[in-house]
Image 1: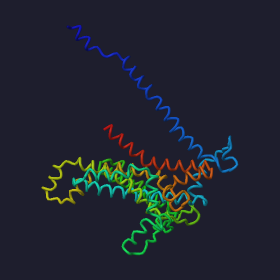
Image 2 (image 1 turned 135 degrees about the horizontal axis):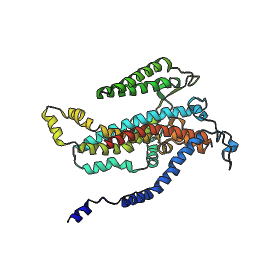
Image 3 (image 1 turned 60 degrees about the vertical axis):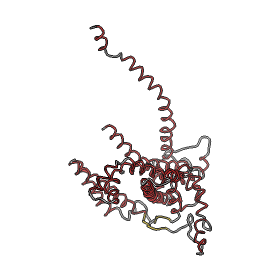
Length: 386
């Protein structure tokens, strides 16, 4: 009996454990190798190409063994401050406005549809499928459909004639009118202001958490950056020597409508799952305390949906930054007023054969996407460790 007990207390041989780890590493090794080569290797190659002059000389662009000279960050300087690359700077502004209205539209419409379905109406399954259906389409199909709807001489402009009114004259995808114009020389001011506000938010959270040192560092940095932006950020001639106005073009309204139509069903599904997970006892307790339905949503349910909202913003944000096929199908590749960096990258690389500048645009897009994705992923990893 003593021998049996002694054997049961004997630790498991480490040979089996090491063998399991070896097999696990061998199984995932091909994936790691392929990721290293075809993802991170190509990212590195693209970034290196952006630091060369490949394509500056048209005779060398498509040569079998092109001569590529290292020029550092010259392509990036031209994109942000060069006289010829004004289209890229307008594309960045277009992306900002498209991202803002696209996210707000998807969140607002998706939450509204989720609240309607949360009341368990008749035919709920039918309407849920109906709202989700646009998400099953590709952006090419969506762009083709909405291009027909937004034709200047047809589609939505023809609707008023059904009730005897004159035909609409709005140039959905061809408009050249813009609003909210700002000077590109003021970019340091707006950038500094945005970063200062983020630092102020970090300061507030640090104060609430009792982290005094972090609050002092973030607060002082926010104040210094705000003062610099106000006194030195406006009219910065070191950014661009001449005033250069950019704004929101009305031609993007139709594209935003199409994008919201396709992806609002996705946010609806997220919000509906979140609403159904809220305990009914919590709502009843709020009603007993005298809260109205509006107050229940505003004070109880919406705060509980904050993690879902953040996840939706991250996903929709990276989709909007990489948008290409929807705009290509709706407005074409040569409509400068509806251009975005991804479309300009395609034109610069594969039409103009300026491979280094196209790689620079791709690298800028990668950085913009990383600014959204990396903080979110790091925050999620920290939560999982806790």
